[in-house]
Image 1 (cartoon, rainbow, N blue to C red):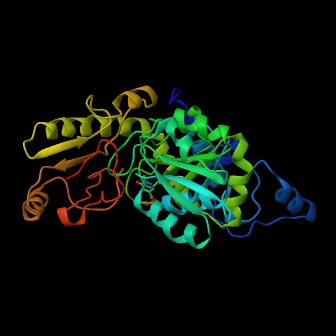
Image 2: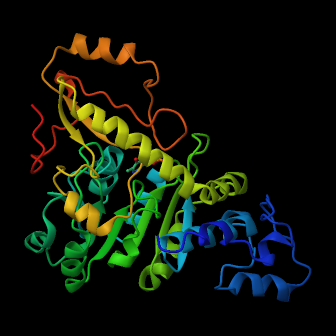
Image 3: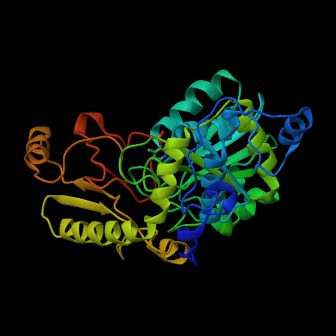
Length: 363
Ligand SMILES: *Cc1c(COP(=O)(O)O)cnc(C)c1O
């Protein structure tokens, strides 16, 4: 992100703050109108600056969405009660029965779960592509391919996708390109500036940043904004003004938090590369990581999340190692102040049983 000062000032117009420094937390279901004309005006306002009904957001929502759109460089943002909800409702807003969707093979597990359950049930065909495919994605595109879904780096295995190469081919075939940008968080990677149509985040992670709220966002470019917004409304997606207020507060400190996350994680990652028991350290900012060049070309920084693979040792040894750690405890999720994310993959229950993944060969 070029102008990080924007993170401090975005979403602070008087419309939302009434002159206070921060936006007011407006909680309501019903918005009261004095006249029929006032109600009609609010209903037909396309600018998303009039409150009409609580589900569609209050000024707290509009202020947060303005900040997110600014962060991701898009024209508008919709919110959902979780990152997964943002992913599923965004996909559902763009596909219909008989369509085909290309999903990156290294996608976040529950994203894949949604493809295998809901999309399958609805008659949307899904095929999984190699995250390292680049322009080769053209061979996977069919006449009914509607959406190409990306995630970079991939969950767990961290593959960096060649986003501009995929986007160029996708747009030639009129496909909508969506990208799960949770890792890049809008600050280290800005998908829309590389031509991606919609950038989705689990704001639960770095936007909120303190492990106390579950929230999702999707930011669109001009072309797909209306459909994204309408689809989100059709599905009844919403998030509470209290959560959005806190998430916006997270945006204010995103830059400084991210710098520290990055410094700390690189120290730990480098240390791990020197340990005998470590087979692979999967961190895109390390020079010998496969995909490091694309990372350097497209990203402006890293964060606190990376993976490593231990050499073949017994499960009992892995368990003893993890249980003995002082600062790292087990837990789901990442992006907060405490331990990033510690996902254990024992030999019998490898996470990486999906299709072969280019350079990453895990046992
Ligand atoms: C956590 C995560 C999600 C899901 O977010 P929730 O807010 O937990 O629903 C989606 N994508 C990625 C990459 C994630 O890490």
